[in-house]
Image 1 (cartoon, rainbow, N blue to C red):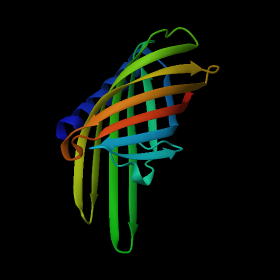
Image 2 (spheres, rainbow, N blue to C red; image 1 turned 180 degrees about the horizontal axis):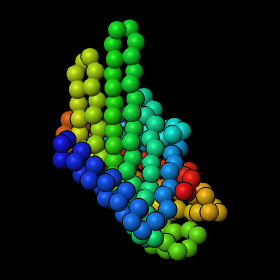
Image 3 (tube, rainbow, N blue to C red; image 1 turned 30 degrees about the vertical axis):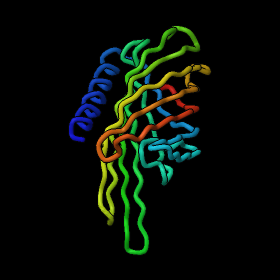
Amino acid sequence: MRIGTALLCLSCSAATAAAQEKKQSVEIGTSLGVTVLSQSGETFTTVGVPVAQGPVPLFGQATLYATIFATPSVMIEPQLSFSHLSGGGSSLTLIGGAANIGYLFTATERASPYVAASLGVESLSGDLGSASGVGLGGSVGYRLRAGAGFAVRFEGRYRHWLGDFDGLNEFGFVIGLGGII
């Protein structure tokens, strides 16, 4: 868990430094779609706006992304999620993060297919105990810029989870909506 958190922080720092140095654009947004979790023959499906991610999407964790273009073709994307539930004297907190590093195949065009590698971390803590894990995976997608200030993405993603979520497979089909600044 500590290694995953350190890698997430390093990728966020590198992405910020790269964007400031080259004055590249940044895309900030959220997504809608479906996440399917599968383990030992059992599946669990969530549909949402924003789409839930990670091994514990039961409570509709909102996910925000900030894509920083280190070069016109290379995108670095930190993602964060947080949920805190309380009631009846009990509480549950979910914290998640991910770092994606992607490549746009036709970056200078209005529309481009892309691929990305992903590292995710998830932590769940509450009155009944805690669990945490690291997810490794990737995604393929298609990004369409609509004018100078808006982008739409269509993406399929996969992550395999380790740690307390060992053996869990996460599949996602997402439409991302982002503003370009």
